[in-house]
Image 1 (cartoon, rainbow, N blue to C red):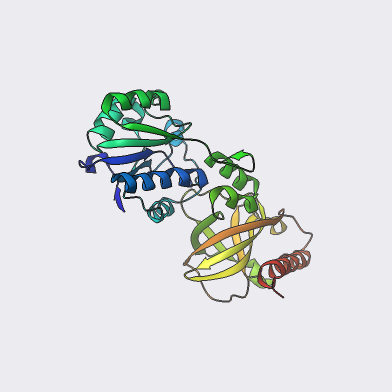
Image 2: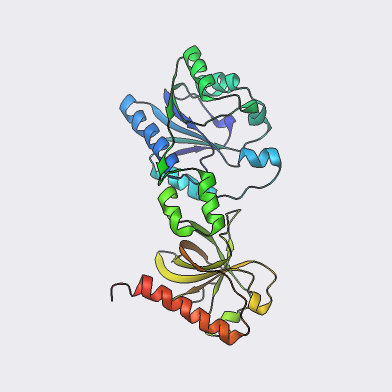
Length: 309
């Protein structure tokens, strides 16, 4: 897969099939669309191109950094796994915000990418004032000699799959439902950093994670997680919150990794969220906290580690 990070790097390609979008999270709806692009490219002997953006157009217009479902690297890896030929991955900035739909079509899609087919989602719109709707693109397609194919929304359990819905599930802590729509469990990745090391004093040492980039942090609470450390995978009890029992004042992501006792400070690990077990709670003392943590880990042992016994 070739990745292009600037419009200036785009050279004249052979005939292509293109899709355009932010593809935040690359959920099941996105996968259906991208797989169709790849399948059509092979059948019609076209180059498959995903035209996407490093940042959300919303973040550009609002001047606020939006929280994401996956990192930029994860996004590229996912597109590679879907067998896309070329990804044009550029920042969304002034040029993209001000270009007209026809100028984008003529100058980029037609002149540079030699587009023969454009596949888009049913609610797609782009260019200045979001004037590049499906109906406008069909007219431009007739004018410039390419076909526009509209992919209808994917509905699962009576819910239209969207990045917004997946984000809402993460914010609500409903991580057990995410796989239905995202196609995989929600994960966050980051380095293990030093913290107060209070858990060690009560027999529950934790790895304190500093999440990468601007990934969404799930709702405060205790979660059952899979912990990926290199090629090894462990189960963990992850606490997201402020540690109210010891008057914590900063949100943290701390994981008690079960059946694990190694120094991993400075290492990058990945947490895969399986379910939310309970709310974060302030206990009257450390002993009461210790009893609850034992209950949490026992629950995870029984459900995820000793489930066959």
